[in-house]
Image 1: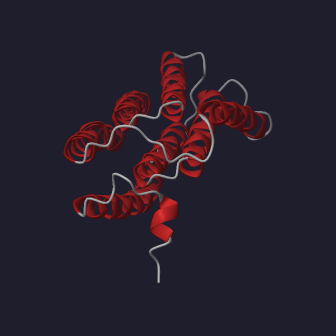
Image 2 (image 1 turned 135 degrees about the vertical axis):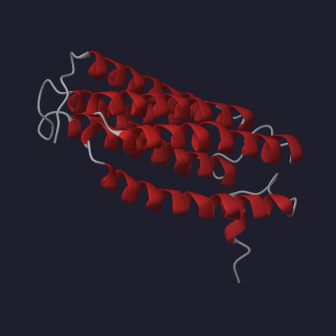
Length: 224
């Protein structure tokens, strides 16, 4: 596997991309507005597409260029536009009130998870001086923040955005660690299938005009 030095131009760009993706995950965790959920996820996906393009240049990989283009088209444009039109405009979803904790508590928990990600991944598992040593802890923190958003937010849309943030964290780590395309395809197909099922569930619920007030706890009560 090809390794990139953290001090190289590509390493610095990937490191900065990881930092931006992490900050956008924190921004999503700190917001209560559905429109901002979608905007932050879209911006995160644009940065992820840039990171994939940067890795494509470093690894001379046409497949990674395809991944960067698909990430930009699907995650950076298609999903945010569709979500904004259906959820924000048509269903008039504005403020997320279905939260199990306050914003300050969520941010403190997010900071603790970020520190945990660095403690677990950086010292022993990754070679010092490589870009993976800098970016993989960031991608792990993004995954944990997305999972935290799914836990503390009870609204189905917020939980869906949390899952999509988890997926972005997985892709960030994958393009940093792996210079070959098959692994990324296998992981991406699995996560996209799950995300696609979740999106269909949310959209069907929205067409029934129940999504504006629904939370995961309320939906569980409907099971017979």
